[in-house]
Image (cartoon, rainbow, N blue to C red; front, side, top):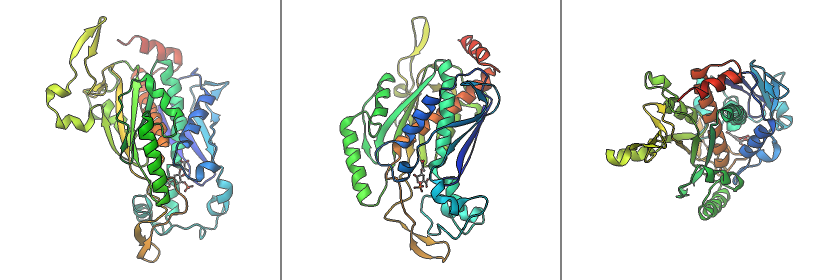
Length: 375
Ligand code: EPS
């Protein structure tokens, strides 16, 4: 299974193609659109989300809500394109409009213009933009339709916003409540403090990042491999999370804390419960030796603050080579809820790929039979 994405932030449309889905997989379009709406939600988002209303339009690979086994192509139209046609149209555009040369520290702008031999960072930022993640949420939601057939579910919540922490410990079932909250945090006091901080940052023209926790429940043991570095499940899932715009750190289970604790406090002791192997704790985050061990998979990712600051950081104007204040017209103050939905989605897509690499299967019946035979 493989996803390819295309599309510019203010271009006509965003496109995704998923290859390798089995036939007869039910595709729940309302579920996908619900997740696209969640990606647009959350306290601290900016003006762009008032313009967009993301919906998946499936172009191929599905008939009457069931996959055909052919490539599944879809688009999500950029409603903002009508405001940008004169600037962005492939058929002819005025490229002197909406140029960006006061490159933003932390964004792809400066390195991109040098690498791609451009003078206008618009030719870089349009693709580097996190707008692309709408496609990954749609594709990841399709991957969730696949995982659901195998009894695998993914959930998560926001653990921290710019230093304001939710220190709670939550069961997988408790996480579901997060998505109906303004910042996807489960501790109402921490969430209120985080919202106040976002208000403060907005007034100051500043931005926030945060930490998201993603959990996977119901995956059987043995996915991934200890035999080759490139097939290790933790490497694959962490790579998927790091591929999300603005992610600067990832953890599995106890994460960096393993380095500060002794072996007896880190490793999860094994016993037998109801005739099955079980772990007394889950510090490994459900992955040992690069393979799922049947426990919940626990992942965390750190999102940096959004690099478009309304107050503008010190930079250089690429056109003049002189010191300048970085460009900023409109910006999200925080997009941590979007980040939570995106991370769930990329983990879903990566897991679906791992599972389909192991099981193969041209149709859903084959996939389910093969999965059911695993211990
Ligand atoms: C983004 C800049 C903003 C964000 C955008 C990501 O867009 P604009 O420049 O149009 O205001 O809102 O995210 C989205 C459009 C989205 O749908 O998530 C950036 O520079 O990365």
